[in-house]
Image (tube, rainbow, N blue to C red; front, side, top):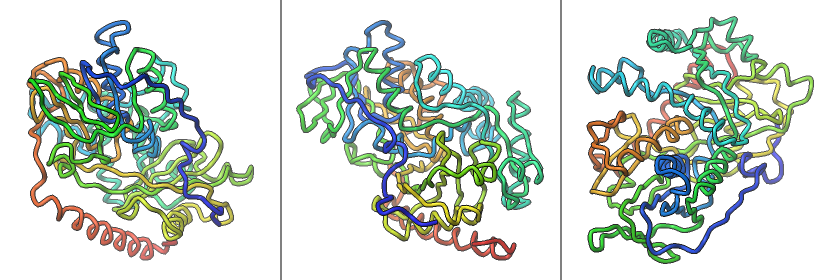
Length: 438
């Protein structure tokens, strides 16, 4: 599996084209959304939808990069409902009064994405036909069985596959079973972000790419967003920059730990290989300590992601790392070249669920999706819109929590690096003990 001469580019944006049409930066706005990813665009769309035709006027979205250049265009395109916590854990944390409504909201997050795609007629290769979480050992399979039982008890179409069924769906026998969630699916993440942006523009929302927010301050009871293209005064500001946040608020970059994803894509597979690699066609995440997530693309490539090094720059060692992970699952890919390799940042919030907060009146922060961003960041748009429109926090389905930095925040990145290395070594030891390719 040899790499091409210059494989360090993102498959999704490399295969797509963006349209960037904006007007001059306005001096005033009703609401400025900082961040043109799924959260920011969904928030702007929801605010515009609630206000009626052409009501997007007065809503301004700015981003330091282009639409889809951050995590929203660089993820694996897996649309997964729910959070990392199981339903019973959410109810235990938030109580019998608020917990069930929260579980229903997050459980419906994937369905919300596919309904939005249909309503807005977004062409992004969307398929809602399921997602598999594959168990690498018996303990992990037991955990998946408990998770599936909880969701089934709430009426969700979530099932457990045995080892033989899992092998038939994946084309590999290294997993002992899997959870199949038929609420889930997959899409082209970059084209989805571009589709949200196009829909927002059609509703009158102004989107300004390559326009970083440099400073956030108060003036006469209103917010002022300072950019390199001028200032915008607004009654409301939403910060939706996720793991790409700058210190607009001193604590902002310290409300989460940044991890890096690492992904690569092969050339389109041959007719001989095609039926051997993920014959079931569903996207997959596994349960190794340093998980792998993989899928097929619409043009027949194999794509795999895993935890990356703690940096934005890539080199030959990163390409070799993804190659090793691919071959552990599918040795038959040995001779298939890699054509793309890319990385992206992932925000891991302190509370293990995404952060929704209002540090000050008129200022809303939403971030931290920990690998569930396609569905949850989109769903978060409606909760952000609630806060912007003045709905009391106690009446919002999603919990609004205090805005504060993690204790001894600078140490968390070091701890995360050490932990990731230890987990990877433990995974390698376990694989070798089972006689598999490491």
